[in-house]
Image 1 (tube, rainbow, N blue to C red):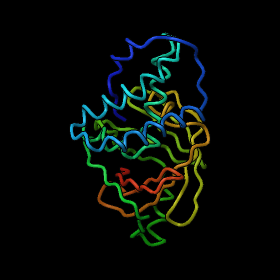
Image 2: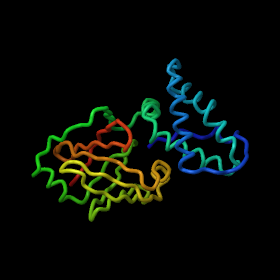
Image 3: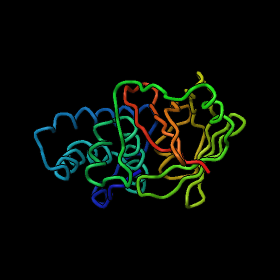
Length: 220
């Protein structure tokens, strides 16, 4: 996940601190809706600056100064999760190392049952973060564990929904990005689409959204 500098947050004043998951998501969706009204602004840097100045900073101005960074991070990462337009904006400002393919139609696997059974036998994978770094995955005994380059982790459970589709449910993480991006109980649906020389092509869908993002899940 990408980070946009929060330097301007230092200039925001203070009040009280209170943030619930429901409130964070409500604020993120308000920002997402406002972003749609800024289509007349063609410069992406100006667009995100306008979004922050008009919506994010006034909201953060209701917090104690010592709580602003934490509150801003939670809204920022949940905005990425909840708002496809914001994710696309960040991709243009800071393109990921590997191109992200987003489609609105649920993809269909090219794998047969035997090939999918082979996938289920594997327990060790890795995938690329936006900056090109490797994140390692252990998929075993209905548990999915991400291990990041800084030795932090995310823990999720998984269950198979069909021969080619499984669902992850977020439990916890001590990784800054993932712990702000996901709340306990968030669900992600994966489809095993195809196999190449050293990786599977997999799609992920955040439950409740109609966007499917394809990525490479490497194996050895």
